[in-house]
Image (cartoon, rainbow, N blue to C red):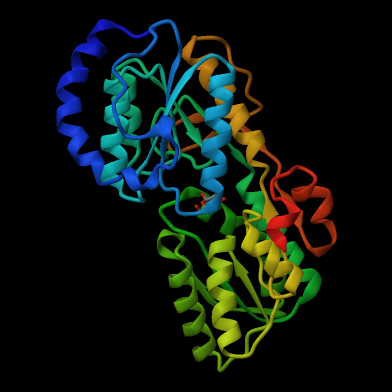
Length: 349
Ligand code: GAL
């Protein structure tokens, strides 16, 4: 599948990039996907590059494992590189994968706009690009696979309203550079709007959280509590990481108010059981990773790919598949995350 031009490029780019990538290798846990450049690839196999923003949240390990497993089951080869949340690193790693002769590149963008450069570079080398979980904006992305992120926000707001539908609310968002964080917020605000318009709910604090960092979310929450003299009745936190920070700040002030989350991380499920977090949103990672791996293999073989919808990324309508997120509360943990073996019961002890 690979052509000789790509291989010719390989030697020069490897020398430049190898030393640089050494700095990022701590991110990669398993043997197969170390940053060592593979020089002895089987030419008959589809070779897939997986470019991750980060492995900082638990979920991305699950994505990586399920994605790599499926590619191998389908007879392909795969290499995953994670960029530690650094744009320039993600671009260099993508360049390396392209130079290595990947047939297709699957990208979880750190920055929705900056990664458009990866799409351009891949296309120049005749490599298709699949945007995974997060949309690359303003670029000719070939396919997009994700969960319905607006629905994630709607589910968060709807669930919190079941607990409290008046008073002072705080919104602690994700990273503004991540298109998902923007969509999740849009979804939540759509549900809250009628209550805000009636004056029943007051949005007293509203801030994105750089890099989705729990510590930064905690600082924001402390700021909100200080400003409002602890008079806050509910918090919509964009994911479990930020929820963790928020809950820490609440606890320091002896408060326990409804808080949302997303990702169904073990820590969050434990908090739900303990009664400090109200809900999380479960996005079955197996489903997105398997689907993406199947699409990647088909794209690599230039086969036809069925999509279900399109999502506009500012430049084009990207053929897309959007999977459904699931609300998790105390009442359905067993029949969802445990049943799917997303989390093992022992992990919750
Ligand atoms: C988002 C993703 C969430 C969460 C977050 C932090 O893009 O949709 O599930 O993991 O990133 O990495």
